[in-house]
Image (cartoon, rainbow, N blue to C red; front, side, top):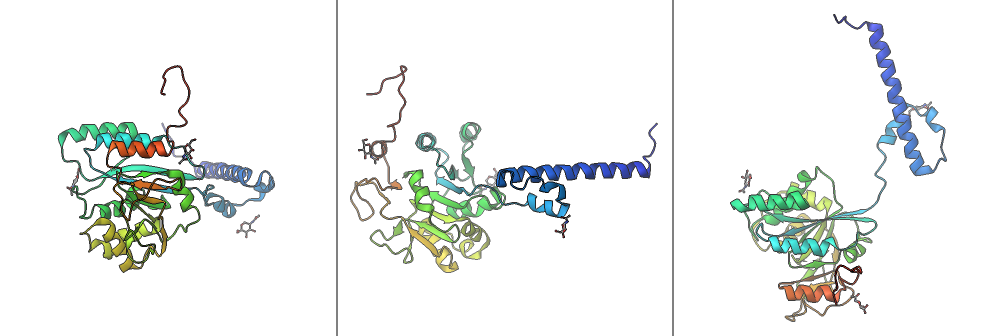
Length: 310
Ligand SMILES: *[C@@H]1O[C@H](CO)[C@@H](O)[C@H](O)[C@H]1NC(C)=O
Ligand SMILES: *[C@@H]1O[C@H](CO)[C@@H](O)[C@H](O)[C@H]1NC(C)=O
Ligand SMILES: *[C@@H]1O[C@H](CO)[C@@H](O)[C@H](O)[C@H]1NC(C)=O
């Protein structure tokens, strides 16, 4: 039969577990200092009391990586396009000091077959975000995208969030290079509209691929200004929210590093050149291939006896 534990037994147990807890905190502090100070303060732990140890637990994260979410807005049925874009982004070499997540974003599934096919993709690639909305282009999908993110990612998660079309090729290393010197707060970044303007405060950034900082994402989620103004071209509407809310006041114009495909010639297009962050309006396979070969994307294919590509 079990007897009720005595008071002194409970007290001993409490002292014992407190003791192990303090040892644990000491170890934690010790390993932290190993990482930070290379043994310089070795030995300090003996004197570290509980209130000091708390600070150890709340040290800021070690890395200062730029964290970017690229949401490519597309449609559930665009399986081939997603497959292709996964190849294009999957082969880009990881960038030191940056963490980039490319995600495909669409609204509610509407067909039976999508439930299986999209679920298969998620099981294999886990790179899909399904928003709670009926599929639409200029009727609030962008709003749902941005305003859903804080909850989806449990509050803070990325420095920047991009909205991109599915017919744009983004060179991720060039993107990161251009973002490094820029503020991480209150940023609105992209290709200035109208096409012949260089002033990022006149109008808005083209929907080909624009980016805002996370605080702007949170503002979109919380403010009434976007909620009450959903209809219209999504890029223009977003520019109007920011204007009305006086947000995104750090502006960066990516012209002429972002542009439309050279053909047809227009004020928004120009020839490929090395200083390119993104090329838009890649509407055909031929245009994609032209871009990928210009940027030497397959140059590093490794030699093997298993294949021969001239
Ligand atoms: C323990 O922490 C308190 C509050 O930070 C401090 O005042 C005290 O001097 C510390 N004691 C030791 C032994 O470090
Ligand atoms: C989207 O789908 C979810 C469940 O799959 C449903 O609860 C929600 O009402 C749908 N939303 C719209 C806007 O159709
Ligand atoms: C692609 O490679 C060629 C040959 O090595 C080089 O001349 C050219 O500058 C490269 N293009 C780009 C955009 O890096």
